[in-house]
Amino acid sequence: MKKWGFLLLFLLCLGFAFSNKALFFQDKVESQKYDQNHKGHIDKRGTSESIQTQTITKEQIYQGNLLLINSQYPVRQDSVKSDIVHLSIHNEWVKGYGLLDKNICLSKKIAQKFSEMVNDAEKEGVNHFLIDSGYRTVSEQNKLYEELGPSYALPAGYSEHNSGLSLDVGSSLTKMDRAPEGKWLKENAWKYGFILRYPKDKTDVTGIQYEPWHIRYVGFPHSAIMNEKNFALEEYLDFLKEQKTISTTIDGEKYEISYYPVTNDTTIQVPSNLRWEITGNNMDGVIVTVFPGSTHTNLKEVRRAE
Image: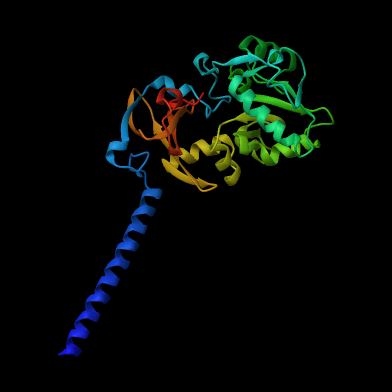
């Protein structure tokens, strides 16, 4: 009798173990499916109470840090950064680098990011940075185009400089393709949200010759993903449209990025307990990025990438 009792207990334990193992693998498969298939939810880490509805307007397609600006997609007036400043009157930002002239302008936020970046470069002995050009008005771009021609300049409205998102960085030592500053930026700019916009191996994608001096702010984690996958901006935006939703873990922190097509006003779901931001692609939709960790930041401050 004891023998049969022991056998019955053994079978029950064995069944329980297999049941738990099946549940473990089931959960693992469901998690993989969520990573690979867009379900219309930005965040699945919380309950339904942590989700809120957000309306996206068509105007938001043309605002933010991931705008594609090229011969097909020009800069609109409402795409220009709203915090453009003259760098020469802000000594607190102009540290660790020089200015080619006193009329150079840039987005305040991007100037702060650039200053942070060159200060870190100085700690590694790289300290001869020089900003040659920043934000240009349409009239300034038009004058440059007339002076240099299509071989060396883009028409007014079709240059990233007209948006406030880009700057030309030089070195007071030598040309950027040989300077320590150029090499340092190529290896490290992505850590600060910048990309080399026109790389040597992407001229067939960008349609622009190699420019080791032209960097563009896209924000983090986008710069990290583009660096890892060796994407030009055109390729990255195509990748997001194809994948719909991707997640990436950087230094143990998980980010979720989703693309949404926008024709008229579009309603999407965003987390109410996490920081998130929206940027347009200047073509047909918006990209929503959810950042790791809970936050109490006012959502109006992060709903758009400024």
